[in-house]
Length: 270
Image (cartoon, rainbow, N blue to C red; front, side, top):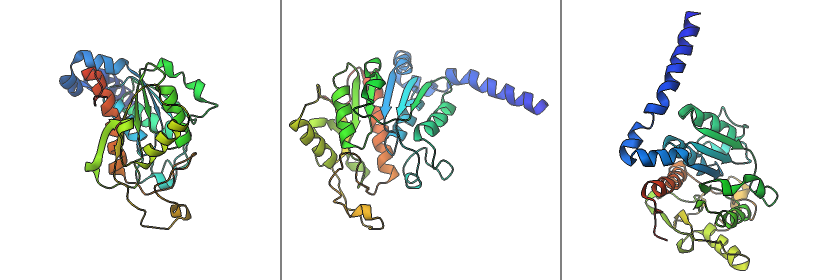
Protein backbone atom coordinates (compact mmCIF):
# COMPACT_ATOMS: atom_id res chain seq x y z
CA UNK A 1 0.00 0.00 0.00
CA UNK A 2 2.80 2.42 0.95
CA UNK A 3 4.60 1.63 -2.30
CA UNK A 4 1.43 2.38 -4.27
CA UNK A 5 0.96 5.74 -2.51
CA UNK A 6 4.61 6.69 -3.05
CA UNK A 7 4.27 5.82 -6.74
CA UNK A 8 1.28 8.13 -7.09
CA UNK A 9 3.11 10.94 -5.29
CA UNK A 10 6.23 10.58 -7.44
CA UNK A 11 4.18 10.64 -10.65
CA UNK A 12 2.26 13.69 -9.42
CA UNK A 13 5.43 15.60 -8.58
CA UNK A 14 6.90 14.69 -11.96
CA UNK A 15 3.91 16.12 -13.81
CA UNK A 16 3.92 19.27 -11.64
CA UNK A 17 7.53 20.03 -12.55
CA UNK A 18 7.46 19.13 -16.21
CA UNK A 19 5.83 22.24 -17.62
CA UNK A 20 7.97 24.53 -15.50
CA UNK A 21 11.35 22.89 -16.01
CA UNK A 22 11.40 20.64 -19.06
CA UNK A 23 11.88 23.47 -21.56
CA UNK A 24 14.08 25.67 -19.37
CA UNK A 25 17.18 25.13 -21.53
CA UNK A 26 15.17 25.90 -24.66
CA UNK A 27 13.80 29.12 -23.22
CA UNK A 28 17.32 30.21 -22.24
CA UNK A 29 18.25 30.06 -25.90
CA UNK A 30 15.14 31.40 -27.66
CA UNK A 31 13.54 33.62 -24.99
CA UNK A 32 10.17 33.56 -23.27
CA UNK A 33 8.23 35.14 -26.13
CA UNK A 34 9.43 32.63 -28.73
CA UNK A 35 8.91 29.78 -26.26
CA UNK A 36 5.29 30.85 -25.83
CA UNK A 37 4.82 30.94 -29.61
CA UNK A 38 6.33 27.47 -29.95
CA UNK A 39 4.02 26.15 -27.24
CA UNK A 40 0.94 27.64 -28.90
CA UNK A 41 1.79 26.60 -32.47
CA UNK A 42 -0.58 24.14 -34.08
CA UNK A 43 1.34 21.68 -36.25
CA UNK A 44 0.21 18.82 -38.48
CA UNK A 45 2.76 16.27 -39.68
CA UNK A 46 2.02 13.91 -42.57
CA UNK A 47 4.09 10.72 -42.50
CA UNK A 48 5.81 9.42 -39.37
CA UNK A 49 8.25 6.94 -40.87
CA UNK A 50 12.02 7.29 -41.19
CA UNK A 51 11.88 11.08 -41.55
CA UNK A 52 8.60 12.07 -39.91
CA UNK A 53 9.04 10.13 -36.66
CA UNK A 54 12.27 11.97 -35.82
CA UNK A 55 10.68 15.26 -36.81
CA UNK A 56 7.83 14.59 -34.37
CA UNK A 57 10.25 13.78 -31.56
CA UNK A 58 12.16 16.99 -32.16
CA UNK A 59 9.00 19.10 -32.28
CA UNK A 60 7.74 17.80 -28.94
CA UNK A 61 11.16 18.09 -27.27
CA UNK A 62 11.32 21.68 -28.58
CA UNK A 63 8.05 22.55 -26.84
CA UNK A 64 5.41 22.40 -29.58
CA UNK A 65 2.12 22.14 -27.69
CA UNK A 66 -0.28 20.97 -30.41
CA UNK A 67 0.79 18.23 -32.81
CA UNK A 68 -1.32 16.08 -35.13
CA UNK A 69 0.31 12.91 -36.49
CA UNK A 70 -1.00 11.43 -39.74
CA UNK A 71 0.07 8.05 -41.14
CA UNK A 72 -1.88 5.00 -42.30
CA UNK A 73 0.84 2.39 -41.82
CA UNK A 74 1.56 -0.14 -39.11
CA UNK A 75 5.10 -0.90 -38.00
CA UNK A 76 6.92 -3.69 -39.84
CA UNK A 77 10.17 -5.47 -39.09
CA UNK A 78 11.89 -3.58 -41.92
CA UNK A 79 11.16 -0.24 -40.21
CA UNK A 80 13.40 -1.00 -37.22
CA UNK A 81 16.66 0.14 -38.81
CA UNK A 82 15.54 3.79 -39.15
CA UNK A 83 12.13 4.62 -37.65
CA UNK A 84 11.77 5.95 -34.10
CA UNK A 85 8.66 3.99 -32.98
CA UNK A 86 9.82 0.71 -34.54
CA UNK A 87 11.14 -2.01 -32.22
CA UNK A 88 10.69 -5.77 -32.14
CA UNK A 89 8.02 -5.14 -29.52
CA UNK A 90 5.93 -2.72 -31.60
CA UNK A 91 5.76 -4.60 -34.91
CA UNK A 92 2.17 -4.71 -36.14
CA UNK A 93 1.01 -1.65 -34.20
CA UNK A 94 -0.09 1.62 -35.87
CA UNK A 95 2.87 3.98 -36.16
CA UNK A 96 0.89 7.03 -35.04
CA UNK A 97 -0.36 5.30 -31.88
CA UNK A 98 3.08 4.07 -30.79
CA UNK A 99 4.62 7.46 -31.48
CA UNK A 100 1.86 9.33 -29.65
CA UNK A 101 2.38 7.19 -26.54
CA UNK A 102 6.11 7.92 -26.58
CA UNK A 103 5.68 11.65 -27.15
CA UNK A 104 3.19 11.98 -24.32
CA UNK A 105 5.78 10.56 -21.92
CA UNK A 106 8.12 13.36 -23.03
CA UNK A 107 5.56 16.12 -22.50
CA UNK A 108 2.25 15.02 -20.95
CA UNK A 109 0.94 18.57 -21.31
CA UNK A 110 1.15 18.55 -25.12
CA UNK A 111 -2.02 17.90 -27.09
CA UNK A 112 -1.11 15.11 -29.49
CA UNK A 113 -3.64 13.74 -31.97
CA UNK A 114 -2.99 10.48 -33.84
CA UNK A 115 -4.82 9.88 -37.12
CA UNK A 116 -4.28 6.53 -38.81
CA UNK A 117 -5.10 7.53 -42.35
CA UNK A 118 -3.45 8.42 -45.63
CA UNK A 119 -3.71 11.83 -47.28
CA UNK A 120 -5.68 11.02 -50.44
CA UNK A 121 -8.23 12.65 -52.72
CA UNK A 122 -11.00 11.14 -50.58
CA UNK A 123 -9.56 12.11 -47.19
CA UNK A 124 -7.89 15.46 -47.94
CA UNK A 125 -10.77 17.63 -46.73
CA UNK A 126 -10.95 15.83 -43.38
CA UNK A 127 -7.70 17.34 -42.09
CA UNK A 128 -8.83 21.00 -41.99
CA UNK A 129 -5.42 22.33 -42.97
CA UNK A 130 -6.58 25.92 -42.58
CA UNK A 131 -6.73 25.40 -38.81
CA UNK A 132 -2.96 24.84 -38.51
CA UNK A 133 -0.05 27.24 -38.25
CA UNK A 134 2.43 24.75 -39.72
CA UNK A 135 2.08 21.84 -42.15
CA UNK A 136 4.96 19.39 -42.53
CA UNK A 137 5.20 16.84 -45.33
CA UNK A 138 7.15 13.60 -44.87
CA UNK A 139 5.06 11.51 -47.30
CA UNK A 140 6.81 9.11 -49.71
CA UNK A 141 4.00 8.66 -52.26
CA UNK A 142 4.37 11.01 -55.23
CA UNK A 143 0.62 11.16 -55.81
CA UNK A 144 -0.31 11.90 -52.20
CA UNK A 145 2.68 14.18 -51.68
CA UNK A 146 1.82 16.27 -54.73
CA UNK A 147 -1.78 16.62 -53.59
CA UNK A 148 -0.71 17.70 -50.11
CA UNK A 149 1.75 20.25 -51.52
CA UNK A 150 -0.96 21.83 -53.67
CA UNK A 151 -3.43 21.95 -50.78
CA UNK A 152 -0.92 23.12 -48.15
CA UNK A 153 0.51 25.91 -50.30
CA UNK A 154 -3.00 27.30 -50.82
CA UNK A 155 -3.42 27.86 -47.06
CA UNK A 156 -1.96 30.56 -44.82
CA UNK A 157 0.10 27.98 -42.92
CA UNK A 158 3.87 27.78 -43.23
CA UNK A 159 4.74 24.62 -45.13
CA UNK A 160 7.92 22.50 -45.12
CA UNK A 161 8.58 19.33 -47.12
CA UNK A 162 11.04 16.44 -47.16
CA UNK A 163 12.37 15.12 -50.44
CA UNK A 164 13.77 11.59 -50.77
CA UNK A 165 15.98 10.31 -47.95
CA UNK A 166 16.77 6.83 -49.31
CA UNK A 167 19.95 5.75 -51.13
CA UNK A 168 22.15 8.14 -49.17
CA UNK A 169 25.09 7.76 -46.77
CA UNK A 170 26.87 11.12 -46.68
CA UNK A 171 25.19 13.35 -44.09
CA UNK A 172 27.29 16.33 -45.18
CA UNK A 173 25.33 16.49 -48.45
CA UNK A 174 21.99 17.14 -46.75
CA UNK A 175 20.80 20.65 -47.57
CA UNK A 176 17.78 22.95 -47.51
CA UNK A 177 16.47 24.92 -50.47
CA UNK A 178 13.31 26.27 -52.03
CA UNK A 179 11.50 23.48 -53.88
CA UNK A 180 12.25 24.72 -57.40
CA UNK A 181 15.95 25.01 -56.53
CA UNK A 182 16.31 21.46 -55.21
CA UNK A 183 18.80 19.55 -57.37
CA UNK A 184 19.96 15.97 -57.72
CA UNK A 185 16.84 14.49 -56.09
CA UNK A 186 14.75 12.07 -58.19
CA UNK A 187 11.66 12.61 -56.01
CA UNK A 188 11.79 16.39 -56.44
CA UNK A 189 12.27 15.95 -60.19
CA UNK A 190 9.23 13.67 -60.39
CA UNK A 191 7.14 16.18 -58.44
CA UNK A 192 8.21 19.11 -60.61
CA UNK A 193 7.37 17.15 -63.74
CA UNK A 194 3.93 16.32 -62.32
CA UNK A 195 3.23 19.94 -61.36
CA UNK A 196 4.29 21.32 -64.73
CA UNK A 197 1.85 18.97 -66.47
CA UNK A 198 -1.05 19.92 -64.21
CA UNK A 199 -1.15 22.62 -61.50
CA UNK A 200 1.70 24.52 -59.88
CA UNK A 201 1.93 25.05 -56.10
CA UNK A 202 0.33 28.32 -54.98
CA UNK A 203 3.49 29.57 -53.25
CA UNK A 204 7.14 28.72 -52.77
CA UNK A 205 8.21 26.46 -49.91
CA UNK A 206 11.33 25.09 -48.28
CA UNK A 207 12.56 21.51 -48.53
CA UNK A 208 15.23 19.32 -47.00
CA UNK A 209 17.05 17.18 -49.57
CA UNK A 210 20.32 15.54 -50.57
CA UNK A 211 21.83 15.41 -54.04
CA UNK A 212 23.43 12.03 -53.29
CA UNK A 213 21.88 9.03 -55.08
CA UNK A 214 23.57 5.69 -54.52
CA UNK A 215 22.63 2.26 -55.86
CA UNK A 216 21.22 -0.66 -53.93
CA UNK A 217 24.02 -3.19 -53.49
CA UNK A 218 21.83 -6.11 -52.49
CA UNK A 219 19.19 -7.89 -54.53
CA UNK A 220 17.80 -9.82 -51.58
CA UNK A 221 14.30 -8.56 -52.41
CA UNK A 222 12.81 -8.75 -55.89
CA UNK A 223 11.43 -5.27 -55.28
CA UNK A 224 14.98 -3.91 -55.31
CA UNK A 225 15.41 -4.78 -58.99
CA UNK A 226 13.49 -1.64 -59.97
CA UNK A 227 15.39 1.41 -61.14
CA UNK A 228 16.44 3.14 -57.94
CA UNK A 229 16.02 6.59 -59.46
CA UNK A 230 12.32 6.20 -60.28
CA UNK A 231 9.34 6.74 -58.02
CA UNK A 232 6.01 4.97 -57.97
CA UNK A 233 2.87 7.12 -58.04
CA UNK A 234 1.49 5.28 -55.02
CA UNK A 235 4.58 4.45 -52.98
CA UNK A 236 8.30 5.05 -53.17
CA UNK A 237 10.33 2.15 -54.52
CA UNK A 238 11.89 -0.10 -51.91
CA UNK A 239 15.39 1.29 -51.47
CA UNK A 240 18.12 1.14 -48.88
CA UNK A 241 18.06 3.80 -46.17
CA UNK A 242 19.88 4.48 -42.90
CA UNK A 243 18.83 6.18 -39.70
CA UNK A 244 21.55 8.82 -39.55
CA UNK A 245 20.23 10.23 -42.84
CA UNK A 246 16.49 9.93 -42.21
CA UNK A 247 16.87 11.35 -38.70
CA UNK A 248 18.82 14.38 -39.95
CA UNK A 249 16.11 14.98 -42.54
CA UNK A 250 13.48 14.86 -39.78
CA UNK A 251 15.43 17.06 -37.36
CA UNK A 252 16.02 19.56 -40.18
CA UNK A 253 12.29 19.81 -40.85
CA UNK A 254 11.67 20.52 -37.17
CA UNK A 255 14.51 23.03 -37.20
CA UNK A 256 12.91 24.92 -40.08
CA UNK A 257 9.76 25.33 -38.02
CA UNK A 258 11.56 26.46 -34.87
CA UNK A 259 13.73 28.88 -36.85
CA UNK A 260 10.63 30.30 -38.49
CA UNK A 261 9.10 31.01 -35.08
CA UNK A 262 12.26 32.31 -33.41
CA UNK A 263 13.44 34.57 -36.21
CA UNK A 264 10.10 35.38 -37.76
CA UNK A 265 11.54 34.47 -41.14
CA UNK A 266 12.05 31.18 -42.94
CA UNK A 267 15.44 29.47 -42.70
CA UNK A 268 16.38 30.03 -46.32
CA UNK A 269 15.53 33.22 -48.20
CA UNK A 270 13.03 32.17 -50.85
